[in-house]
Structure formats: C-alpha cells, structure tokens
Amino acid sequence: MNALAAFHLRAAAIYVALGMIAGIVMAASQHFEYGPAHGHLNLLGFVSAAIYGLVLKDRPDLAATRLAKVHAILAHLGLVVMTIGLTLLFSGDAATGEPLAKAGSVIVLLGGLAFIALVFKATGPRTA
Image (cartoon, rainbow, N blue to C red; front, top):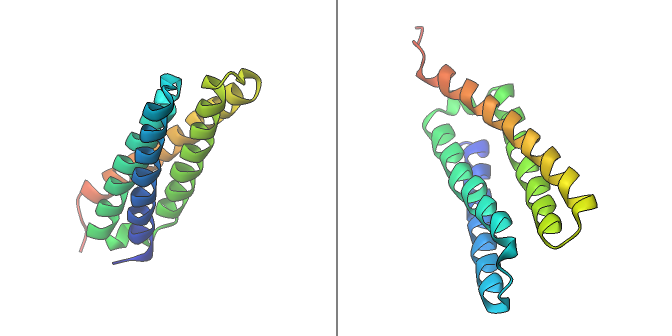
C-alpha cells in the first residue's frame, strides 16, 4: 500500500476513536451541545478519510500526484481546525470558535474540490 493511502486510513482510525470517545464523554456529561463537532469528526474524519485512503489504495498512480498531497493537507488540516472551532463555538467561545470553524470549513471545501478533481482524473479515459 502506498504511503498516502496508509496515512488516510490511519487518520481515519484515529478520527473514529476520537469521535467515539467524544460521544461517550458527551453522553456521560450530558453536554450534547458538542454534537456538531462530534458529527463532523466522525463523518469528515472517519468516513471521508477512509474513502480517501481506499481510493488511493486502488489508484496508487493518483497517490503519487502533487494534487493528492495537497488534498491530504487540506482535508486533514481543515478538519482539525473546523473541529476545534466548532468545539469552542458550542462551548460559548464564539469569538475564537466561529472564525476557526469558518476557516476550517473553507479549507475542507478546498480539500473536497481537490478530491473531486482526483476522482475525475481517476474515472476519466485512460491513455496507454
């Protein structure tokens, strides 16, 4: 398996563990206001990173591209920034949390657009 696919899959495993821990902590403390951060960590973190890893495992030629590396940076950086921002926002620190959540969302969007470009490259006609 190529290194970038392995990175995404390992990150997905870490995100799902963090997401489950966050869910347990939320339930135990009855602080459900952190639900959006928990949900984004599980969906954008675990599910999306796993999909990224599986796509790049199947297409190692894509993993070798600069676009795939840029995508990885944007996707994971954006998720971390957004999750921190959402956590701060819903804990009452809107002054710090809102700009971080917004910035993280834009970074995630840019990563998503990079992934769309990778998918179109992967599913387009192949040349010999």
